[in-house]
Length: 122
Image (tube, rainbow, N blue to C red):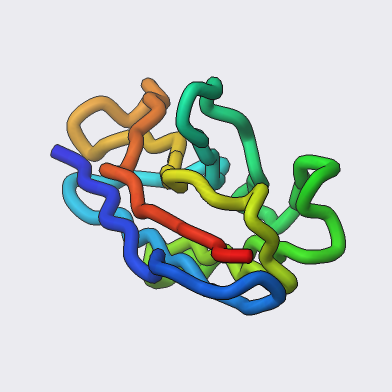
């Protein structure tokens, strides 16, 4: 069993900042890429940012220069620092991680967190 638990969402005014965290736990053998997605009401879930196990990053164009993704491999945790938030960033943010378990080490599966709400008021 693998679990991803997110924290750090909330309500913030436009121009403000939030930091999301996502900790993976369970029967983890290794974690490859980790990332954050978001889904606004009536829209499809979309990639916000992702980071490889080696630290390479990729961002959606709408968040470049405002959001920073990072990870602590020792803690199996990924972070998303969100600065200069605007109302268009309002969404449920989901953590994603590609993990191989101790039971099946040669198979990598994608796991999702339960989501955390981020609301930005104008």
